[in-house]
Length: 343
Image 1 (cartoon, rainbow, N blue to C red):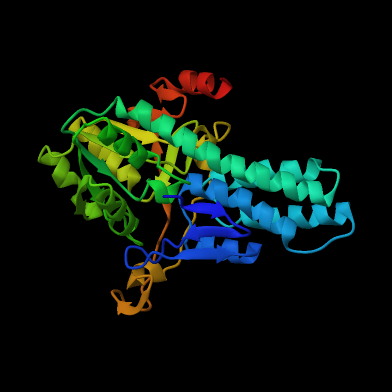
Image 2: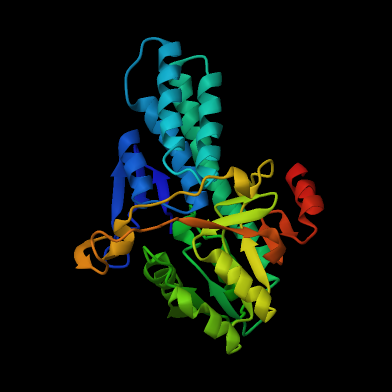
């Protein structure tokens, strides 16, 4: 299942409508792309990397120019606007910068448009390859019969195809390992209950839905053998991922359960520390209403104060290993991660 692709414009699965409807959005300009990113029609760090690349392609076609320098300045400004759409996940910026570099190096507008699309397509294809590599490395950490806890959605919908943490589970399943997945609902937008369960059920993988606050009891009862999550940015001292990840890591440590993070190397921002990263805060309405599509289903007083960070930071001391497309990285991370990044 391809989450995002180019067909004369950007086409993507509208993830806000799942599991009720399977709808393909057609995105024809940068402003519509930014809206889709911010409303989470497209989300997940690797998928955002592809969206960023394709977004620069859109910018190349938005207007006609007879001057190459004015064209490049316009595309550069539009690209910077895409980068600002979501501040915490680093992959969006990676995709934008990679394609923009090709545009700025081009000698003509026609060439810039051609190389931009070629590079964006390369980003998408590379994502599929690296996710399957990640899955094969990560599957070695899973044993037959494991109970695996995860949060948010890290499958095909969070990538171009296959997935990161769910990609590891998919790969283990293909190897014949029977696993039981426990999916946190992932408040406030229920990306676990709406998306992860939908993907796993379509794959025929055993999945049980729990609320975020039930993670402790399923660990306490011995139902969980491993925790596997994705990441939106990995810095020198921590992992940024969907809100609730930090709590899972602390609980896993208390119960002696391995805690794994699956993410491509483009998610690593090793020059930064946790204190350097801005955590996105989202609309209070996401917590005041039952579902983003159900504006009349109020579940909190209208004037209540709301704190709604989209991500939290998990210190690396809680992470058993990092699963990447170049292999599994074990501590000490300050020594081992730079080795992988240099290869």
